[in-house]
Length: 408
Image 1 (cartoon, one colour):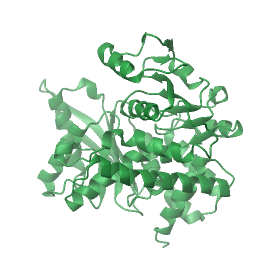
Image 2 (cartoon, helix red, strand yellow):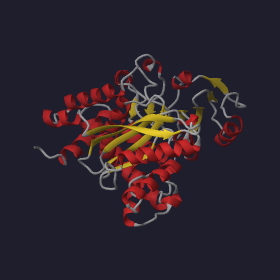
Image 3 (cartoon, one colour):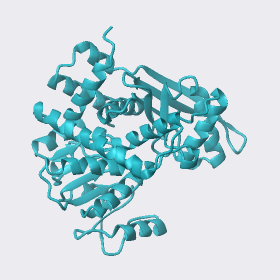
Image 4 (cartoon, one colour):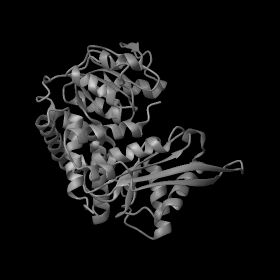
């Protein structure tokens, strides 16, 4: 089992070898400010009491309040949450938004709970953490298996406990509860803006063949956006199956088929392949948009894409990074490629604090220049330091964090 926190720290070690940030600063960044574990008692529908383990890691707030999602998953554990909180710190700095990094979670298989149990669990997480949260302290958001509805329950619970009516403590809420327009497509769209800003620099043609692993919110949105901009999506996958058609997939039909059958398998006019095979297809752009650690030292040398864009968090291990770099395959790293999501979360927080509501058009008009600017700055940092884009992103992020870190 790859320990994601060790992966994160090996990235930190690597960047501090490329550029000297000072030992004290790097040592501080090796440790989260706070690492909170809570137990959440829930009265189950059958009358029994069950205790769930929950977490919140508040990693670094040099740039602003801690920001980061909450995931509900049976495998969620503290090392994963710590790694994700560290990456959020980097991501917010890369996106140049005034927020720090945090992450939360509960060890639970949410599909096994009734709606009533799920609501009690979500409110219980807030009850235990209310003192640590707040619009100027720590602002959670949805992540794996958490939804706008869960955020609405949490925001409501927080208001009950604290009386805070801004709703700015939780982002990713439904629109009618203070959510932002454009949050759904934000991650995929932000990724596309980054890709578009770097496409010529990375030597890609105007029309690219794209393979996407993952067909959830992020993957499906990205597929749609790339297709709308005249790129050909040749392969997509969900957790159980993958399909390819080298001439391109009709995404609307794929969506309809997936909704009606619950699977992508046997989609007419496409060939069934495995998720592993999808990663190794010859294409211009490969987009892992599902899970961490899917490209490792075991399969990195089989990757045939010209560019890999990480819309998932941590899909490439540090060892695989080096293999791809030697093969001249550019990687657009997660901390840049998927930062559109957190940028629009920041917009939501900003709107809540100001009592405003922006149209989707306004949201995307604000998002585009921020993503393009981050992409160009990272490209420059990578070039100056003769390194790959991930390290370019880390250099940019650490410069921004260091500037705001007290030196005592």
